[in-house]
Image (spheres, chains in turn orange, yellow):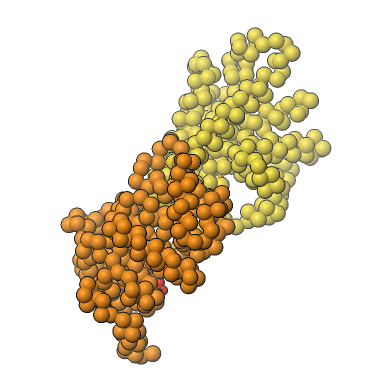
Length: 257
Length: 293
Ligand SMILES: Nc1ncnc2c1ncn2[C@@H]1O[C@H](COP(=O)(O)OP(=O)(O)OP(=O)(O)O)[C@@H](O)[C@H]1O
Ligand SMILES: [Mg+2]
């Protein structure tokens, strides 16, 4: 169970640009739930994920995981049980290292980073098999530096890397946005499989309403730092892309555009 | 011939320095000014120990340790107290100047009458024909050991994390590791090597001088850049090998310029101009973009 209680987040507090994004925001996500989050640009989706992961501090409120208060836990400690793919494809991999080196490093998450060798050659085949699922031909490029890959290829790798080791939460921020339609489809199916296999509590931000409808067992729509729509379980199954699209239009009419 | 030997010897001594600065400048992308004082720190510790009659071999671990502490200090100031990288280094560099004076006792210490790594019973026992080459052989051995250890370290999990920290700090956090601690470790390792280089230089020239650190960082950065330029042409070289070669090459260029009649007055000016040319030509002019998304 992940709980956000009365979160207040003010950006650039104390300056003329002060903006209060979240004002008493609350959300709770039961174990193993797969939540899809949609919402217009700037509605606070990435900020929400940053708050959960500890990447930005909050001004007020509490974050609880299984009852434990993690509000003050530093970002890197929270990631012991979180796997994360960022909106920006450059952030999930190391550009100066090869595919093999990146995969090896991700494989060592959760272990001490001591003086043992990082790359285990015996595992190369295992990594190749994982990469082959992506259908991008990366399995034949193990020695290529990741900086030379395309944004979409890196993002696909980042998904694999973030879910290689045992984790409880998976945080995805528009992880298919940089992919071509066919690859996006493959990656979404892979995401669904991984989440089901590892029984992960998942939050997936997406602008693709069809994915939000097809995947997951809860859908949230955010607007100006608030949830304006929230359906889970049986009710979620009744939600269609038309419902969501209609809601989007309603909101933008309200805002006067 | 003796010019060639002295170029090789000094190039090798500065290679250790350059390997240290390679860690901060290239791997961590951290402009570490501590170097200008941790180099003489190693020398000061060495002067103190050698005057005290301790074995020259003991000066090696001692200077490594002293440098490591200096580097860690810069790291802690930067990471824990959020002081900007350049400033953190300058603060420690300034403070260490006094520490160095205290350690060495004076601004100049001569060691001509003491045993060193290069002048001892073992070296005098060598056949006369080998003796002129003893320093270069000893230095080559030390540099080789440092280089191999560094290669081995960079292939470990800890070494990978160091490379990842310079490359993409976000990923380090996602791997549930504290990038700040990795930086402190890297600065500590780098300055340990820098101080080791100062220790060896002090025994090589057989005196300590408080101002021997001035311009160390620039010299090291020049060597690193020459080395990594080499790497572009010869991809089979390991980065560490390239840095060692870069250091020797750089020292060679300076010696050549001096022997061709360049006045020592103009040396720094020419060094600066050369460095600028290499940097512009090599496309090192912009610092790698740090991402804030
Ligand atoms: N570091 C920051 N400093 C100031 N304002 C910020 C900062 N980060 C986000 N904001 C503001 O908070 C709001 C929400 O941003 P956020 O990135 O969470 O949006 P988003 O829902 O992820 O949008 P998108 O769909 O475009 O990714 C925006 O108005 C943005 O300008
Ligand atoms: Mg976003």
